[in-house]
Length: 317
Image (tube, rainbow, N blue to C red):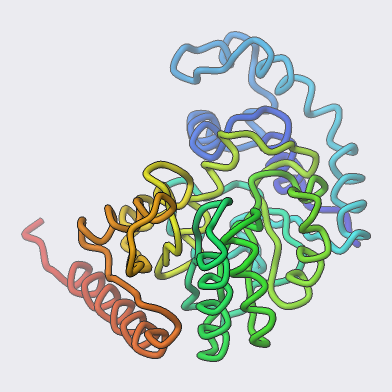
């Protein structure tokens, strides 16, 4: 593999070493104008209150210029493991993530995202579903695979696992978004599943390769699930949790939101009832999938027309 260019190395070093997150990364780089200028900045400049950098972050940034070879080795080690490291200007970077207000500055990915993966549907739900909920996630994903629609989920136990399995069983493609680094696949029970997904889709993360899962990272993962899909389908969700957060982020990003309507109310579906009451499209089961696929195509078309209309509007100035 050729040595990554300096811009990529500086981007990877800054993103992986500081814990800034996408918004913080953008704030710091935009202030200085480039990653090179960030790494060359003086102590006084890095201490500006508007940058909101801690003393530890400043010390790390000031050490990075002398340690870029470490990141060359990390990128090469990942490549030998079948993992690529991509930045927003590179061809393999997931295109839909560029629509986010602050795209992840670095993505690590096992597998590939293809042009045919759009439109995709995110199928999400509780980690502790009822047996019927797990089976519903699996059957819905299988049905979407049969409709040549890629399934996005989060590799967690429960509904996520059912969704990935159903897509693979339907000979479809699926994308797993992690809340940890790619060297820390969790739960460990899904390690073999992650390998299968990488062969029939992609496993990706915006976190440094060795990052352990945390509540914050898992919640950040939800926005990527929504961004990579054009609709979010909630299978079973309690009153609070990641599935409802993903649905909320989907709405903010202009995605469609669907929720399974269960014939009998139960604790694991209270979030579904809330979403449907707030306007989510109710789903009865896999028999609805062909119609959902058509709705999804129509939804994308209407969004595209709305953007075009907005761009075409003239201005007096």
